[in-house]
Structure formats: C-alpha cells, structure tokens
Length: 204
Image 1 (cartoon, rainbow, N blue to C red):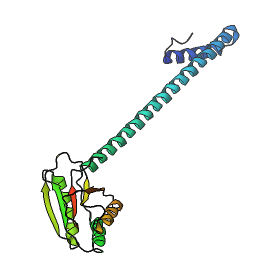
Image 2: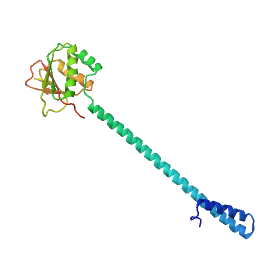
Image 3: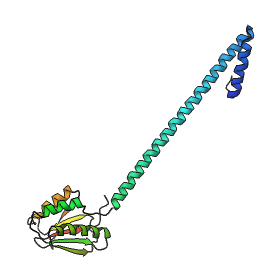
Image 4: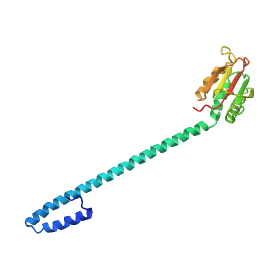
C-alpha cells in the first residue's frame, strides 16, 4: 500500500493521520490502523537501508582485504625478483668460515674457472679468489667459454677416490653456508688440484 510513497511523503502521511486519529471516533480508529501500517512500512524501509549499508560495508571490507593481499603478493614477487637478480658473492662471515677451514689443511693449487661473457660469474669468481688467497692458497683465474654448461658452482677433481683432503670438507662447509657446490669429475684436472667452475647463476 505504501511501497510507492517516498520517504518524505510517508513521513508527512503519518503525521496527518496521527493528528486526525487524535480526534477519536471511527475515523480516528481507521486513522490509527493506517498509522500502524505506515509505521511498519517505515520500519521495513529502515531495515532495508540498514541491510544495504551493511552489505556495502562488507563489500568494501572485502575489496580492501583483496587489495591488501594483492599488495603483499606484489611485494613478495618484487623481493623474489631482486634476490634472483642479486649477484652471488662471498660475504665477510662466509669468508671467515672458509679461511678457518682452509687453514687446517696444507695449501694446494686452486683453479677458478668462470664464464668470460658473464659479468655476474666474473664477480663471484673474484670473491672466491680473494677468500682462498687470504688463506695462503695459490689461485689461478681462468676465463673459459661455457656453452651448454648447466648453471651453478662446481668443485672439480680428477679422481674421486684420490681427492685432496680439503675437497670434501670444503663441500660440506659450503653446504652449511647455503652455497650450492656440486661435485664434478674431470680427467683433464691434475691430481692434487681443485677446480672451482663458476657457471651462470641459477634462477631457482
């Protein structure tokens, strides 16, 4: 009955009906009934508005939560990309650990091979050279052409059954330092020599 009334029209109607109802008689009773109906319609509209407001608030909160999650995911992705693009290096604490280990063994010849066209590999090879030289090891730097070689850092020896004593200990140490040092057997390596091959940086 009152659904087509605007809010202001419904409010005015309730005021006039209430005023007439105050006069009593049958007309007053009828007006009282109309007043009740109008009041119920007003309450229904207020309830509908409240529900709409609550729904809009929930929708806004949901969108804000989704935006915040999206922002966190974006920041995480940027952090991952920065880590992947960051050049490998031997940090000062890692250098101290390497120095401590190397000084326990008789120095042996070390060859550090690195990809000549890879600036990141060149920098990492230089930091390895500095760490070994600090412990009194003779280090020969060798630029090589790496075509089709898998990425990563490799520790090469000639005979896995006759390796320098420091080789397996060095591999264990690098593992504790979160540096992936893969073993490699190559016949061209001289006995008693370790070759560290610095290939491209892994992207995983």
